Image (cartoon, rainbow, N blue to C red; front, side):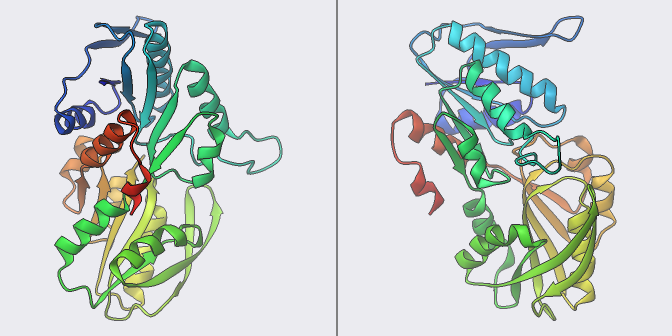
Length: 311
């Protein structure tokens, strides 16, 4: 087994290697003067089982291109099997035609990854589960839920006054998984989105009076939905509002919005490398998903069951 890293999240890849007790494969991933991506694998990979760890996060296109060129370099280096480990799969929100003459970019990116040389994909909390079907190669979608459940149990103590909340109707299944594991009640935010990047909270479905509420979602980008949900929950009588979100995209002024919001603590994973601004925010913290990804990688390499990680 060999682990190779792009430039999107080298700290996560290093942590994965530490969990697996193997050295990081030496590779050069750089830009030419005109910003073309260049990749050179500096050690023999012929016949090896290689895992390339690369989130397609900001700058999305640069990191995606790094992944594609890395896959091609490994394929031409005669690697036996190449697995693209994509902790955060960019373009996942473009999983259907949102209007006439619009693309399904998630499918396009899946095709690119397959054509570049990936034999299988290992990812985390896809925005929509059906994206697995966009790939014509085996795809394992891991879930951050066990990591979140463990942290909630350790950090919240007595859970009798805790309620899990979905910030919108589309995230109910995800929030219910957390609620079921913790044996907690579930509330839902009824939201009307007027345009992309903006949301208007309409109603809280469920009695949150006197409750410590935990918002659960897969992606936080502009943070408008989360912050509006937190305002609605506090207005409905919640005593505390926390949030657990797998992928902390946090673009634009999102971190400032989180700082100024009623959210007491937003917890994300390190599927996306945190910026200095994120690390400095007092109500923003990160959980490492390196142990989860490392175990997934180990099981894929050993041809063992990955589905048991979901339990």
